[in-house]
Structure formats: C-alpha cells, structure tokens
Image (tube, rainbow, N blue to C red; front, side, top):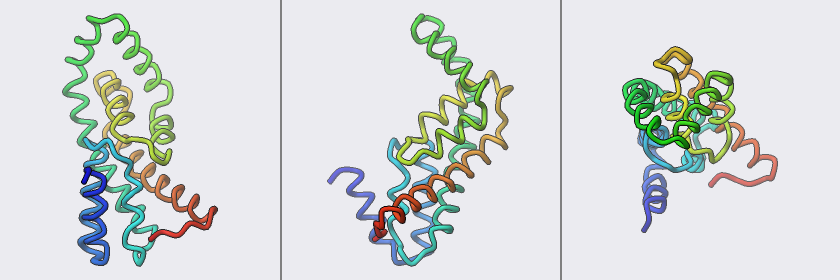
Length: 170
C-alpha cells in the first residue's frame, strides 16, 4: 500500500473519535505544510459528524504552525541557497524572478497561492520564505496568519465545490 493509501486507512481508523481525529488532522496539516508533498484536502473527508468549520480551523492552524517553522528555516537557509544559486545563471535568474514576485505580491500572493485547492503548500511557503530578503519583505507573524487564513479559505472552497456539485463527504 502506498503512503496515501496508508494515510487514508489511518484517518479512517480514527475518524469516529473527534479528539484523535483532530490531533491527527492537525499533525498532518503541519507536516503537509513543512515536508509532505500531498494535498491537505484529503483530511476534510473524514469524520462527517464534525463541522466543516472546525475542520477548516484545524487545517488552518496546522498550516500556520508549519508556516511558522518554514519561515524561520527559510531565514537560516536563504544565504546558502542564494550563494549556491549564484553559481548557475539559470538558477540565479529564477531566484531573482521569485524574489521580485515575493516582493511585489507579498502576503496577497501567498494567500492566493495557498488558497488554491490541491496546491502543495510546501512549494510556495519555501519560495516565499527563502526569497524574503533576510526577513525584510515578510515578517513571521503575518506569514503565519496568511497561512492560517488561506488554510481556512481553502477548506471552505473545497466544501463549497462539493456542495455546488452535490457531492457528499463520506
């Protein structure tokens, strides 16, 4: 069984215990933000008794926690990554482009990217934290709050799409 199958089986096994489900979904949301290249929306489909608003809040809090960790990690690795990037013209050009994008769009750009259903959180979060000009473009508090709000928005967008097409959560 692949990792997604194992995750689904595990979430299913705890889905009828609201406390266990909430804790596991929160941890999964943190890990999805920091290291797991998996869409976070899968966790919304379990525990049908739990309100979508509670699930959205758990998802947002997990993403915010992960974002806080990524922000500080990005500050530490920005220098070495930029020095490495400067050795390769195409990588340097890409990083310069990303830096301009982050400087221009800031929290609004991050919010929009992270609100898109099925978007992998790790990529935009790391790009925004690394291309942050030594923490001068974005600050940790707003970065974290942006992730919280985008996580809640994303959960509600997914829920809205399911309602629109009359698809039931299981």
